[in-house]
Length: 414
Image (tube, rainbow, N blue to C red; front, top):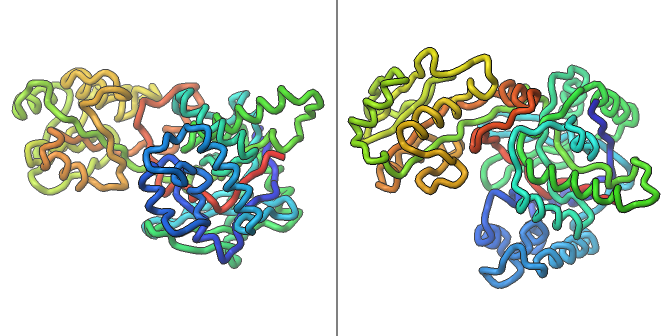
């Protein structure tokens, strides 16, 4: 059962939230963060990407960079740009994109729940990325950025979300990217108790986005537990910062592929090879988006095609075999184009659906890429089924948007 608790959030005063809040550390590079933070000493980038305080080209893993992170975190608190709440709260965090709003509960999630598999993952993590974020958590003794969880249907929690979100929010702003961010502080003792009780009824939480941050936060908490001879289990380091959304609120968007060459085939030969396992329909110059599961969109040689996988080419009783990323990886990328490792092959690149199918067309028309393949997005139910069965999704399967805004709330480990 999910063990969560309220906590004394560290967060900006209302009038400073737009100055402090930033995009997550892993969605932009150092130069982009430097440009976004220019002229704004209050930007959280000075804590989550502190290499921007050094000369361009400074390695983000330089020991000086980690030291600067904690210097800046301390300075933000000293300057009153970040202030810790005087009592423990839960919080509601909502995001609006394209007229649709999703509401989550900000929680302190339990380290042991992750270590014991009650917080379920669907992606592999890389140790080097884990270690980078572990260093960041260690030096700051805090979870500066939240991780993104989903939870199954719970009418009581959704009722609390609905009721609280009808009141005036603590923060309410639209970021430069056009996404709205709304934040409420839950102050009622009985509501706080009910949230804790209701999460305890939920068998599992699911990592939607932020596998490396989740692993890093949990591993640091586990380290602290092992090194404390007086460890009890209720210390703050046994918990880490997360925003948990009802799964029904979340929408996974498509994660598409572009490939540099046709493995020696002409466009005509390539289409003929695809026809072995797919029903192919030429749509023409009008952009075509996949209409359903096992239907794909191909852009090649100035034309869009609908590809529908033939019966017997997928296995809808297998949580991995039913995924369109598996079907396309096996039958097109591997068997026809000779691409066997999506993580390392330089012939393939990936484009989040937030950029639109026009980005696929642009990259092919420019001559950079030979073809583009758009996939029907994975559903939250598919994601949870994979996590429940202990499976791991193939690389580059899910894309969540909008990303959680960093700097609205921080969790200290002491």
